[in-house]
Length: 303
Image (cartoon, rainbow, N blue to C red; front, side, top):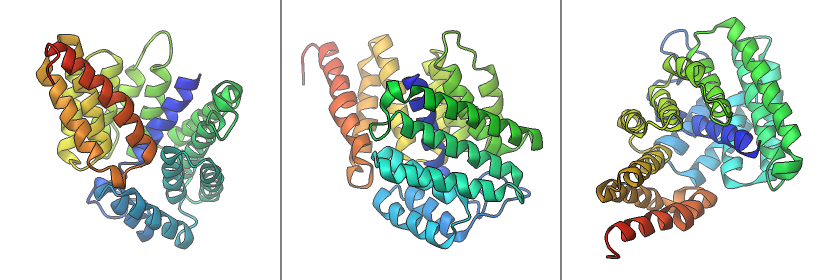
C-alpha cells in the first residue's frame, strides 16, 4: 500500500513537474480547442520547468495562487512542490485548495474540474502516508480511499471526453502506478492511455516507466531519450535515464552503461541549489553511492 500510494503521488508530481517545458501558450496539453490557463500559472511553469529552478518557481507559484486563485493547476503545482520538499503543512493547504478550485470549476469546465478533483485526492493520499500525516501503515486506509476517489473522478472526466490528452496523461500515470504495484502486472490500459497523452515528453516518460516495469530497459531507454530530446533541461527526465542506464549496466555488467548513469546523476547534482533537498539527498547518499560501488567492483577495485 505504501509503495502504491507514494508511487502514484510521485507520478503526479512528475506530471505536474514537467508541464512548463512546452512552448505552446495557454494550454500545454491541447493544440486545438485549448482551455484557458492564467498567465501567472504559465509563468510558474516556466520558472519551475523550463529553467528548472525550484526557489524561483516557488515565488512564481505563490504569485499565481494569489492572482489566479480559481486555477486548480496553480494549487496542484503548489502541492507538488510541497510534496517533493516534504513540507507537510503546505501540502495540506495545497490539497484543500486544489479540491476547492476543482469543485468550483466543475460547472463551467467539468472535464478539468474532475481531473483536478482527482489530483486533490491524490495529494491528500500522499499526505496520509507521509511523516506529517499518519504514516505509511496507519495512513494506508485513508490513502487507499483517496486513491479510489481519484479514480472515480477520472471516470467522470472520461465520460466527457475519453480522448482528451490531459485526461489520458493523468489517468495513464495513475493506472501505470496502480498496475505496477499489483501481483499480476497488466499495463495495457495505461499504455493505451499514455499513447493518446500530451505533452509529448511526458507521453514518452510514461511509456518509459511502463517499459521499465515490464523489465524492458532497452525500450525504456529509447522512450526516455525521446522525452529528453523534447525537454533536455528537465532534471527529472535525466535522473530517470540515469536509473535506466544503471539497471541496464548492472544486468549486463557493462561498465560503460554504468558510467553513463553516473554522468546523468552528477549532472542532476550539479543543479543542487535549484532542486529540492530531499531529492538531492537521496540521489547523492543512496543512488550515486551504490552506483559507484558497483562501478568500482566491476572495474577490479580501481577508482
